[in-house]
Length: 558
Image (tube, rainbow, N blue to C red; front, side):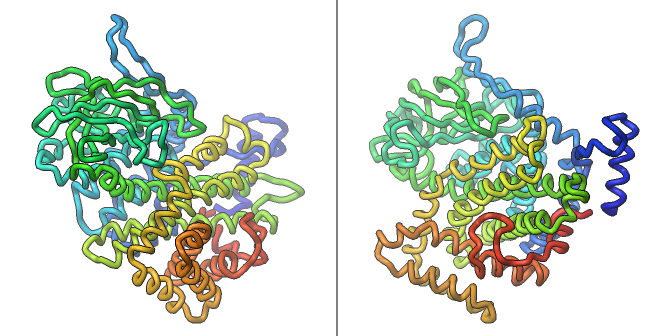
């Protein structure tokens, strides 16, 4: 549909409804039904490029289902009615149950049916991780809170798969039928796994954790202590960290015991969070709760750090999803809203800003799918080395950029963007969470340096190779040389520059991906604006004329 047709259609609908004077109220309709897959060229191209092209029929089907307008309305509802904790039943028995909006189950059912909770592990094959990432990117555009339980469950599977007792729960983790009943797993059709690492006195410093475990025999322990954040508190099992005689170990702690008793995990309160309102996060105490040790004794932090490598990829995917939805909302608004005599989308300054936002979104999508592709290739040492280096860097930079993107897209809406009955406040509140969960920005940057120190030759070759691959791009060469110079400093010097290292590493990889695979105008705009210009980080402020027509059409077809 052409812009003129859209404007005429809008004016006609306004006149028919009697809203204000015909054609003059200038309000923007909600997004219509759409296919979240087919309308996202960067996503389609990335799926094919990273090896999941044979799964496109399924992705198209889910793109249409997730793109229904009624599902977006339901997502808004479940974020307005927050979860509530019921500590006791009517007879005074302790139950520690979290009640959710009924629509919560619908979104978890969608996540399970897509296989986001574990199909990449339970149904492995070429492109499995990339296909899951594409599902995640689409689901996260509509309802982000329900991503958390899917992330935790999926990330736990490769750890639990090494345990001799995994076969007993494997069918429950492979099931694509969400089962939200609060009963022992022996009675369920599927199961969900949460996570509890941090404590009030330590935060990210897991070595400061004080919860402790005493052996009960046959691999089981009695856990006493607390967790400051217990993610997805109604999960059937949580993986938690506690001290035992060997140091800090990881434990598999069920919500229900095999004899039908509730494990004494007490939910003290739900966190009153800035965003992520549909999802519950709790403070919890363990009053002698039973747990089974997972992984090597005393290696619990290393075990959960391995799990975090998977959850951090999902933080990148989740932030990319928020960017994408905010961008679509911004472009949609600009195509309908008039100011100063013409549509916003026709005004050069607005086009410059929106094109810059589209560039950020496309680069994030390309990077996220590239990382998912590396997870699909565990047999290739170079891919795994790249993954160890790039996942924390991407989590730092992409999650940071999502905050700026959602704020800018809210501003496209003007005052309407600041009102709670529209979509922008929820996107804006949601944006910071991925930058904090699973390790804040500084923690990610320190992890980048740690990975670089562990494999210095690989890192030097990889960084230099990104510049050599594009010999005609001096901006890439300059960024690579700057990176290599910092990595040659002593430990304190590196740490002081760690955020620059993470940023430049991501920008180099994004530039490489776009130069190889995006239309020339898109790649040129990215290199010139991100690596070759000094315009700061404000969108639309860099001294580069962006390829606005190409970028906007690719971002959201008109």
